Each structure stands twice: as C-alpha cells, then as structure tokens.
Length: 298
Image 1 (cartoon, helix red, strand yellow):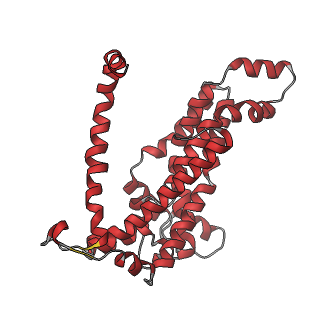
Image 2 (cartoon, one colour):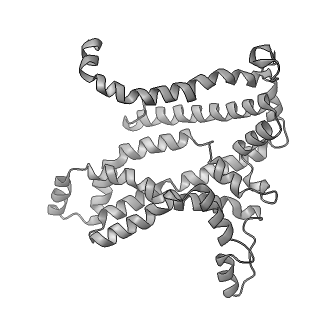
Image 3 (cartoon, one colour):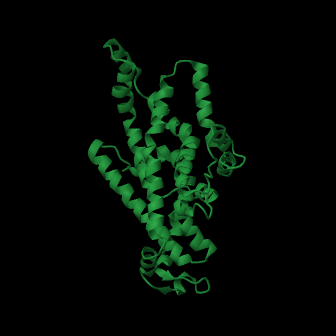
C-alpha cells in the first residue's frame, strides 16, 4: 500500500526531501555533541577522550550567582512577549473588516514594512532614537519640559524597549497568517448572520474568531514551545554593561561562557537545560490543547 502511494506521490516526496536533509544535517546530527554537557571536554582530547562527570555542570549552573538573574530575566521577557500574543490577532481582524481598498493596502504596507528591516538596522535605529543627547524621543520629552531619559542604560526600561520594538517589527507579518485563515471562512456564515440581524462585532466574535481558533491554538503552542528562547541577536545588540541586570538572559550567558570564555561543556549544559524546559512546555501545552479542543501539533 505504501509503495503504490509512493508511486503516485513521489514528486511531493522529492520536494520535501531538501527540507528533510537540512534538518537531519543541521538539527539532528549536531545532537551527537550534546554529550559534552556531561563531560569535562577538552578540544585536544576530543569528545570520546574527555572525562565523564555527569551532572556537575548542571549543578554548577544551578548554584551560580547568575542563575536566578538569568531565569528571572528570561521568564519576564517571555511572559511580556506572550502577553502581546493577541495583538496580531486583533490587527488581522481589524484589517479583514476594512472595506476601502487603498486605505487597507496602505495600512498593510505600513504594518508589514518593519519586518523587512534587518535586526542590526532596527537596533541601530532604536539606539539613535533613544539617545539622551540627540534622540528624537528625548528631544520630544525635553520639549514637554521634562529631563532626558537614558533609556538604553537604565535597566528598568530595557524589557519594554525590547519587547515593544519586537512587536512593532513583527506585528504585520504575524497578522498575515490569521488573514489567510480568515479568507477560508465560508462567506455564507456572514450572510446568514446579517439576515439574523447580527452586528459586525457579533459576527467577529461568533464567526471569525471561532473560524481561526485552530490557527490561534497552533501558533500559541509554537510560541510556548519557544518560551525560553528569546531572540539572541536583538538582546545582544541592545545589551551593555549598564543594563546587564535586566538584559542578561540564558542565551547571552551561553554565548559569553561558551564562545568568549571557552567553557564549552558548561555552556552546552546550560543550553541543554534551556532546550529541555522548552520541550516540556511544548509537550504540556500541546497535550492540554488536544484535550480541550482537539487541536494540536500531533
């Protein structure tokens, strides 16, 4: 049966083959090196020649001075980002209700455009706009009669700057998925609702939102699966010694201890700990979603 189906659909398998090869080479094969998290790894001895020390690196991380700061910053930033998860849904629902063609296209272009700005350029813009001496934001604050604020050096501002700028950059692009799901809703449902006297808000609440709910659940599961993984590049480019208290997360600590300090085994242990937490969260939320509304990844 499988052979006959393969004969009919072999072009599809050929199309998906490059993606499979990519994941095997760059995702699964490197898992071989995870074992250095349990060894006292030396480059000269190699992976097999290095001494096995079990969970010593994990215990060292749990007992380190930075542990709770890293966990706190990572969790707070992730929760902050997750709290803004509904924003792209609201944008998609709003765009879907626009009737004026040129206005709708203009709004879509304005919201989509920031996604195509590179991370380096975006962070450079943020630093320039928020500069206490020449930044346009501080110039406006001074015009209002207040003192300039050093946004990039005061830890209290870092999380809001990071999360809100990221949401602004990816807002329109995230809404595309929901707009595609809205297109798939049967127009006859809206026509029947209009005949019954339903208002626009009632149609959004009782037709559009239930119609895209499977998409919302899947994207929520994927977001929770990356809960402990925050954009390293953006954090690293905005990070400095003065805001380290609020900006230091697990990914930046792994980079610092692994690549800059050469503690390969220790940094691998920290990264593995982070990945295991993500996996547990992904499986847990996926299980809950499957139980609640029969929508899940598996």
